[in-house]
Length: 115
Image 1 (cartoon, rainbow, N blue to C red):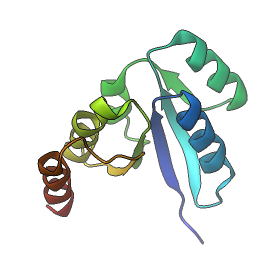
Image 2: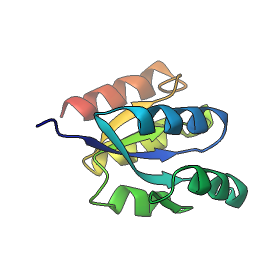
Image 3: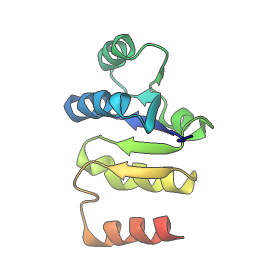
Image 4: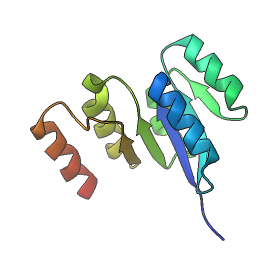
């Protein structure tokens, strides 16, 4: 029996929409939670992925015990803080490029992930 990774995606714009579609088709993944500040994006993705929790609250996504991994598809200026918060919440993290805006931020994420 193959276990599936329950995925939460933050940032439902162009890349977040593509990633949601891709993860929804992956046998080893299940879309568990979608998050974006834009109500239009939330409505669009909610319609496209019925049964998936949708919210504007990133803290709720991080606190969701049904989420194993967080996909960060927000503007790059938010990648470091959001990925760091997800790692500290005990989630696996996948970040749309760039990982961070500075090498120091990138190293910090790698160190926290290793820990």
